[in-house]
Image 1 (tube, rainbow over the protein chains, first blue to last red):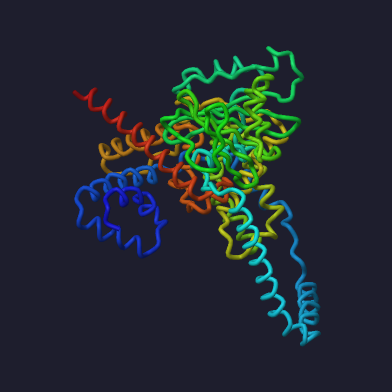
Image 2: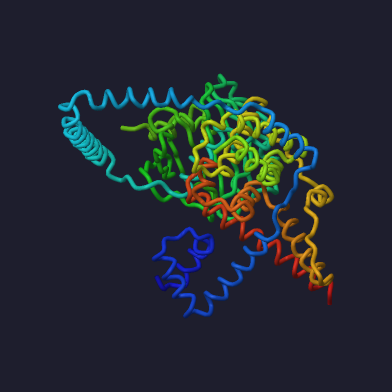
Length: 302
Length: 180
């Protein structure tokens, strides 16, 4: 590795001691020869030293310390199993493992057969999968981020910053926070149709040095996430491609989630759900009108 | 690990845990409650701790889980109240003794600026800077703690440091302009 750009990309990993010895050695050699990279390295190192030298940021109040000392010293600790019980269990386990010598020899054979069977099944599945969808590539970084955000929101790690079921309030909340307009249609209100989904709220999520808009919906207790950013920041480039009404949708399945990404009028969208097929039903959060059925239909798997 | 060793070792991480609790809760009282809940859980689960486990990481994971559990139960989400400068100031530790008053002053000023810059970061970035640069957890440990891929830790950390650098540079420029 000698390209300065690559070296700068790996600089943080190098400083954080997260690289393997060989790559670390290559960077050390490069830094010795390249004044420009060395200057960047020194600047980054100084920053980290300063940050690391300023901690701890907070100290617990003496009252809290005293309370915690009392808590850990007074509370009875979780009990361990007595040594006699441990010995008894170990003896029982040993007894069973040495009981049948024939079984002992048979075990490696069973294990090998099982591995072979699994390998054949996986091979058949992959072959079948590649025959069905010839245009499959890995998901884009934006699709991965959207799926990750969806999962983290479900786990409670990304609480909503604005909680409302009024689309206009969400649009107003995003104004000035993201460098684009977030306009959420409200087909349910305007068409008077049955409410099939519920808008929950929104929050900002960091993506590529800027904020993207995250909007959460529920469809009969199943969560749907919509992530929006500028098409200058993200372009959906990978996955299975489906064209509907002149827009190219990219479909990916990530960790069991259905992720549809597309760009339209300067914005890039990702819609994440665990709904059936390609999750195309999640499109109703913006397209529930009768005319929009033409739009959702082509997204169904053939 | 004996119970006495555990108690002593666990209490050594009190300030770190309290700092992390403040990042999660953004509220002094809630942070103290979360610290207490974490120690309670730790004491109860002490038997699960392996002899060669990383106690600090184990406590941090317990704190994060306790926090997520609270969020799930209350369903009210965190209180998004930013600590104001005065509050942040009051949490800071006293400066160490140094012979040269001028050097002490400059170092203190620099440290204060870094602390203010960290406090001014968005929550997501502040958390990752604290976990990596102040608490010294590895990328993998942080990934486990935050339940995200190590690649996400790497990219988020890169963005957080870039933002921190921009904040510090802008402070230096303002200080230089004042000096002129």
